[in-house]
Image (cartoon, rainbow, N blue to C red; front, side, top):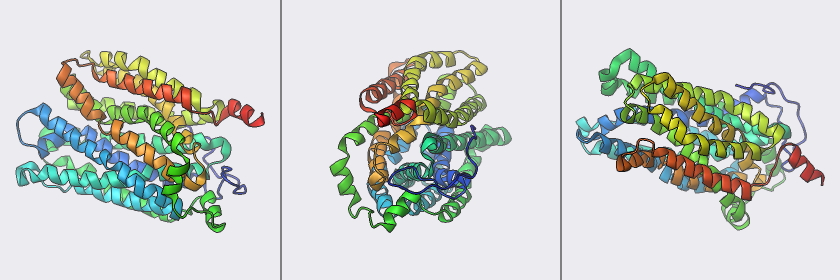
Amino acid sequence: MCSQHVGQQPATPAGSDAGATATTPSRRVLIAGSIGNFVEWFDIGIYGTLSSVIAGNFFADGDRASALLSTFAIFAVGFAIRPVGALYFGPLADRVGRNRVLALTVLITSLSTFAIGVLPTYATVGALAPLLLVLVRLVQGFAAGGETSSAVSLLFEYAPRNRRGYYTSYGAALGFVAFVCGAGAALVLSLAFGDDQMASYAWRIPFLIALPLGLAGLYLRLKLDDTPEFRRMEEAGETPKTPLRETLRTSGRPMLILAGVIVLKGVAHWTLQTFMVSYLSDTMHFSQTASFAASTVCMGAVAVLIPCAGLLSDRVGRKPLLIGGAIGLIALAWPCLFLMSFDNAPLAVAAMVILGLPIAAYDGAANASMAELFPARIRTGAIAIPYNISVGLFGGTAPYIATWLVTSTGNDLAPSWYLMTAGVLTLITVVLGVRETAGPRAEKVVAG
């Protein structure tokens, strides 16, 4: 990854939302702030990569397409409850601190991911199996509702002013690293055990790994102080008593803007990360191993590029990266899926990497852009609510909608329509609603 400025940073006074830098070593901040995203996305990576295997284990034998749709519907359930988690954890982080909430969310997420690995299958308990899977996904989704907003706030408030894009991009980057680890684990297990053993029991192993990962994340977060900005507000008695009420009263317009900006993130992330493996294997008829390999290479490339894009957003501004990412997705969605339709594994890998390029550009600027919409006093809750509503509506349903588009239209390239629509919605929002907050253009506005 782009690794500039990850060493010790000099301390600066913690002024009001001035991007104070802590004396805590930056690498520790980056890891502690991003570890929850890692655990969450590790689970998503496993779930998406093994969606065909999960469908076979948690639903009755029969229509393969219906079982896969049901598997993605359960995936969407976890996103549907995220706004409830956002309403609880977001304002709580504004009142009691980002770090306390992050410690709680990483613990809940890792325990619920571990639980999937020990659930009984349909062959053992019948229809109870998918019901238990739904329950676990609800718990996961509730905790995830407070993870991203708290992590973004923590990384943003620890970052030097001229490195906010770079710092906050690590949350997204480590998420893709986690997906690589999840997809890579599935690939290794598939090669080691074969398809039969993978479908029988080996699919459980990656889910079980989430528990020690989560405990490590809990330890790191408990050892880290809260952000300089939050500590300053706490010492001055400026933390809000009713953060949710204050957020809804004062930040309606920027919250609507954030929801529009996140449409692309929701659709593109979960289509690329959760739908594509089953798409390559079930629709494009690649082997499961080739599908895992394509996903792993793509996610690895995106993970490396996101911090580079974050660093670039600090220099040239957020809007060029957001606009470029949206236009790139609109332009590349259909051609990339078309390239995947050829019976050529290297070409499919290249197409997935190309499709990941605009997503990496967008992600490099998105987290800092979200944080810069709101003051520190209500930042976490103001991010959490629209973010999780938008991700719940457009992200959690993306694998289901993409699969439904293929089955209902008979057009293997139909998922590209959904990707392009998301790109258009976000592009309109960014052009009309987002004010530049970084780079030379922002400096001119401030100077003027």
